[in-house]
Image (tube, rainbow, N blue to C red; front, top):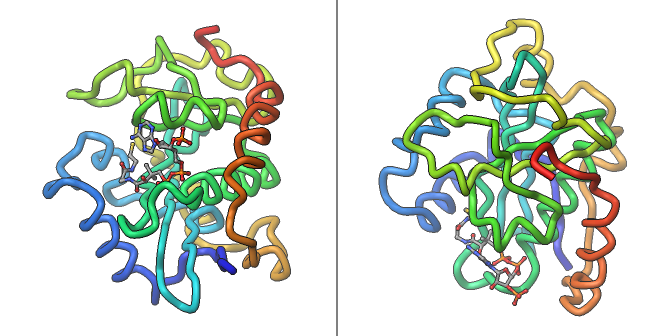
Length: 209
Ligand SMILES: CC(C)(COP(=O)(O)OP(=O)(O)OC[C@H]1O[C@@H](n2cnc3c(N)ncnc32)[C@H](O)[C@@H]1OP(=O)(O)O)[C@@H](O)C(=O)NCCC(=O)NCCS
């Protein structure tokens, strides 16, 4: 059994160590980190996945803006090397995106490998520009509400509204205590594959389709 819970301050050192293990040294020098500097994470959506107390995977989200509209920046997401390929990344992706939809977020952005993220409904965003240097082929978006990326184009910028930042930093919205942590069975990869197809048809078209 796995437990998925919102990340707490106590989890942070372990999550940072997991990211250091999974990504190349100097990951925080990536341009996407400039959008995160000095901006708190979206507390409700940053999740850790544990089994018997052992951290196996983590996902984080930050608030950003495109064309003044609120956007979720997904990442980093990482699974411990000993547990990769077992569906845990997919579990965290689906669980966090479902929470985001429930909380009323409309659109998600990430910089990553399209062959992995396509299965969750992400598609290239032609007219959304991350700080350089970023390969445009890796700038991917997902609509949580239909049409949410249509006409939303231009530079990705930091969230600077103090009110928004303050609200997102605290776990105060929407999710009741009962749904904060969930216990899940080990993923059945065959079933996950079928779910992926269903997710894609429900995801709506992105701005470049
Ligand atoms: C990428 C990552 C989060 C995926 O999580 P995971 O639990 O290992 O993956 P899942 O079990 O959910 O999915 C496995 C599938 O994803 C594919 N996959 C994994 N990483 C991939 C990548 N970078 N590009 C394309 N496909 C990828 C696997 O080949 C496998 O495909 P299959 O279902 O056709 O066999 C995890 O492997 C990881 O932490 N990698 C190192 C850090 C990283 O690269 N993070 C993402 C940045 S883009």
